[in-house]
Length: 200
Figure 1 (cartoon, rainbow, N blue to C red):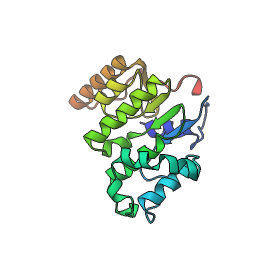
Figure 2 (cartoon, rainbow, N blue to C red; figure 1 turned 180 degrees about the horizontal axis):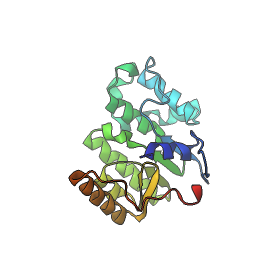
Figure 3 (cartoon, rainbow, N blue to C red; figure 1 turned 60 degrees about the vertical axis):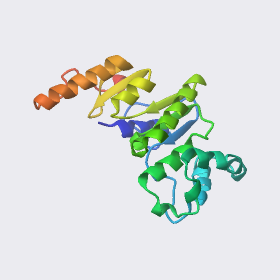
Figure 4 (cartoon, rainbow, N blue to C red; figure 1 turned 90 degrees about the vertical axis):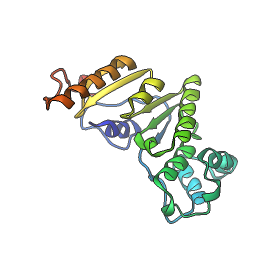
């Protein structure tokens, strides 16, 4: 649909073919599992490597290291090479480093889908804390329950086109109804689909 592509455009990884994106604050992107990590290095070494990618100094990582590992719940595995980590372990460690960045905007792709239930609760607690602090979390997901519970607004896109944007309950309701129709019959794209306004 273009969800991950849109996040990468916001993060400045991709350049849009047309239109523009304005970002007025520092971003901490958490977009793809394993990006910023080296499988041949240990978990501990990768915390410092990924931290450097996010702009941390070694001293800053030293100060945050125990908190990062504790949040990830990987104390027993930090000396293990990351090529031996499961996808869930990858995700937990990457997210634990990413949330340490003092950025007003956090971009989250569907990588949280690989974590366990307890870790998900911890992640969404972080989202709640971010919101209370006036920070912004932009997440993409097919998990309607998560979107409804933690988002104020939602954007529904299909094939790079906006189908709806606004109140989260209104948009998720439209998403669910649209999927119910597609399950019954193979219908063409929603006729109200429109390109991004003003080319954006």
